[in-house]
Amino acid sequence: MTAPAPAASDPAETEASPGPPGVAWRPVLLIAGALGVVLLAVSARYGYHRDELYFRVAGRHPMWGYPDQPPLVPLLGRAVTAVFGDSLVALRVPSALFSAAGVVVAALTARDMGGGRRAQLLTAGAYAVCPFVVAAGHLFSTATLDLLLSTTLVWLAVRWVRTRDQRLLLAAGAAAALALNVKYLAAFLLAGVVAGLLISGPREFLRRPMFAAAVLLVAAAAAPGLMWQADHGWPQLDMADAIAGKGDFGGRPGLIPFQILLTGVVLSWLWIYGLWRTYRSDDLRPFRFIGHAYVLLTVLFLVTAGKPYYLSGLWAALFAAGAVEIERNGAPRGWGWVPAVPVYAVTAVTTALLTLPVYPVKRLADTPQPAVNADSAETVGWPRFAEQVADAYHSLPAGERAAATIVVGNYGEAGALDKYGPGLGLPRAYSGHNGYWHFGRPQETRGPAVVVGPETTAGAAYLRRFWTDVRPVGRIDNGVGLDNQEQGKPVWICRGQRAPWAELWPRLKTLS
Image 1 (cartoon, rainbow, N blue to C red):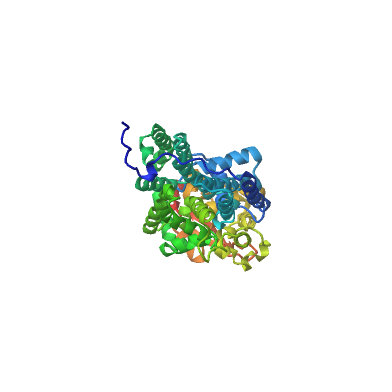
Image 2 (cartoon, rainbow, N blue to C red):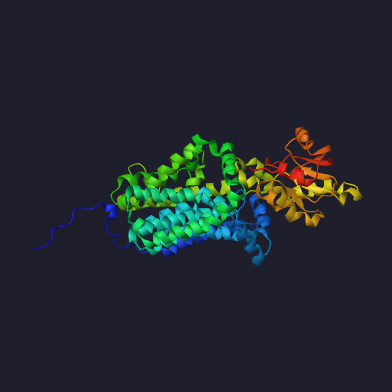
């Protein structure tokens, strides 16, 4: 007699599915290459972003952590400048490569969901013209590397669900370990993916030795940064409160609408459709954990006033889910015009006009780009800023100038003076902003101080807490009428320091 057949099991816990279609390497690489070429072609236009100027300096002050980020991106910036030189283009090459690599990972995600050539191209194309991807890819920032690692982490989870290759669990652990050293935000994505798998399955990863090894790897990678945070009073938590309090992207009400803007408006339909189909399609049922992860994290970020791009690591997989469904079953009635070349082309052009430095800098203020992508405004005017600070510094009598200190309001201003100040005869600039506070306080010269900010001359009352004689001597003007954070800030000469820097410096510490 034969043994009775076992009871049917949950489909999510069954054996891995058969092999997927082949990868459409040539067109996928063409799309990835096109994005990389465009990003490199415009990488030298305008100038440094304030974060890039900060990373240049932070990389020369390596620590296990900073108040506003883990250590990996500053270290990467230091490595790039050491090997390829201290130039804007060199610093932005990795970002272009990361973004191009993300296109490939997005296509591979579609392939591992069972998508053939069309699904892979729909996914790769949607990722390549996604405004958030393109904007992040233009700058050397934590967002760029975080996006690639988060997208890779989700792809590895998708691939593991399909193949049950236990080595992928360790690979996912490695991706998570790197991501946690780029942004602590990666912990939420990791928790969301694990929670999604626990809800819908497959849950067998919990029993695998490679999963235990991955957990140990992630813990070991995160431990130094967490110890640094603990030793310094958990400033990252204060940073999170400061970011949430700004109300960027419309606050809680803007969490969903701004995701639609950041993913291409019309093409955002593709990931929304993919999210819906993870719950409705039998073919996508093994990947329902992605839908669960998205819903859980959306609720979490609504409660905690998170930003729309906090969910960006899931967008490629949701694009892929929508593309796979369209390839298999066609687009829903009335929506067939969306996954088509004209929509992708229009989205690509619109994305470039709203995110990339394609306008003459003198006309940038007259375009909608600064309102839509505020980061573009923060890449204009830094050499002129340094020159105006130098004018104030050189206006001092020679005897005072030798003992003068330069103090500025934020890390971007300090980073700009680090970059351009030596050529203008300026001494080192100091700032109490975020990680820059940890890079050292001024020397006890008792000389005057050249101070940039607060934002208006009403800030004199604040400055008199530190100096007895406070006089405005100029005002920052980028020369192109662009309303960015430095525009219009007064420059001051401050004398009569009220206490030694050892006492004043802790009072100048700020997080924002």
